[in-house]
Amino acid sequence: MTRVHAFSDDALADLDACGLVAALRAGDVSIPEVVDAAVARTEKVDAALGAVAHAAYDRAREEARSPRGGFFAGVPTFVKDNVDVAGMPTQHGADAFTAEPAKADGDFARMYLATGLIPLGKTQLSEFGFSGAADHVRLGAVRSPWNLDHYAGASSAGSAALVAAGAVPIAHANDGGGSIRIPAAVNGLVGLKPTRGRLAQDRMMREMPVRIVSDGVLTRSVRDTAAFYREAEKIWRNPLLAPVGDITRPGRARLRIAVVTQGIGRDSSPEVRELTLRTAALLESLGHHVEEIDNPIPDSFPEHFVRFWSMLALVIARRGRKDFGATWDPTKLDNLTLGLARHAARNLHRQPYSIAVLRRSQHLAARHRASYDVTLTPTLATETPRVGHLRPDQDYDEIMTRLMEWVAFTPLQNATGEPAVSLPLATTAAGLPQGMMLGAGAGREARLLGLSYELEEAVGWPRIHASAEAG
Image (cartoon, rainbow, N blue to C red; front, side, top):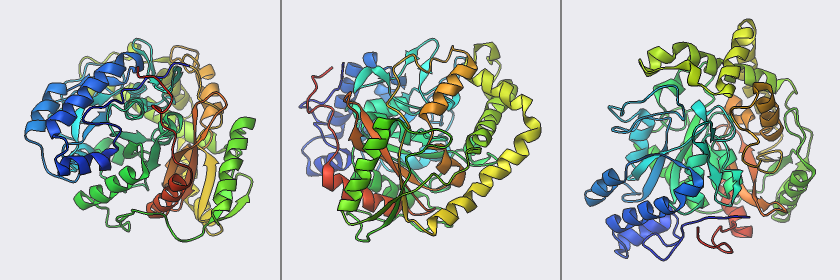
């Protein structure tokens, strides 16, 4: 098993983002030193990981000499390459067009960077974020630093790989079917998909008939994730949601926790089921009331979710020239995008019903929350696939079958709009991280963060550099 990481005795050390903030404020390190270390680390590991879509290292060094304010002032980061950052192209992981540098920050990037984070560039994703693995026909796959033979998971894979490998302590991710939680799960990270509307979003995300996409971050500690939401809502806050607030310690309430090991239309593997039940036992030992239940979601849910997901591909395929300019060439789209677009075109007459089903899922979730405060599931149904398993030049039906066997838990919260967090609570027999997911009712991020702190204190998270040689 080949691991790579960049942790070393430099200005970043093995600090998380909050630890780095403390070191900067104490004068132990300087912002230029920190940014230089992050650039060096990224260059050290990216040839193996394939995580960087656009490098902006000189710009980051310049900003380090005159950084903006904010809690995270001077902390290096990356932004996923499907939101606009002024001066950087937004390529969406696609070869079907050539992007020009964005003229202005998008709504999310404006809020994100106002926290003081310094972007080193953009991270690679699957084409338009459709696949559960960032695998590219021309560029190849984004690989997990825990094992280069395996995927780094979902469309936020580039961000996750760089955080897990120690290049930066925090990076942007977004999640339309699991792409914050999936890469967190396979890279040993904390990944919280927030409540729908919790953070500022770019216009394209806001205008979906069902707003399935949420932006967020990937981190190595619960406190970094909690601090990000605290700081973000100082800059932009949805008045319809109670604030997350400053969550700094475990919650005191003992919770009613439902345990579900059956995916939506798919069962989890025997190993993943056993790891989930071990997590349930841990929660019970901490004093929570834990009850295993059948999955309350109808088996028809994946059909409706895929139908809606495919409509997004059809819109891209048909509006490509208008949205992405004269360089648009649909023949360069990969088989998954094209297959999704064909699926949508064949089922346009069924689309309104599927949209209605996804919207009604909020009511199903509300009934479930009347009995349970939190739901524990595995983040993914099986161990992380090896590179090539979800290759985008395969037959569309084969890709979809393999995707559905793996991604059988995360899409639900994209439909309901509820928050869910993947935590690095399990490790497979092969030594790979296997995330466990905790979901709660809309607006209950604080509850999830409190429970996450409790679990982090109880067992700690695996450390990639504890037993691996530097890459």
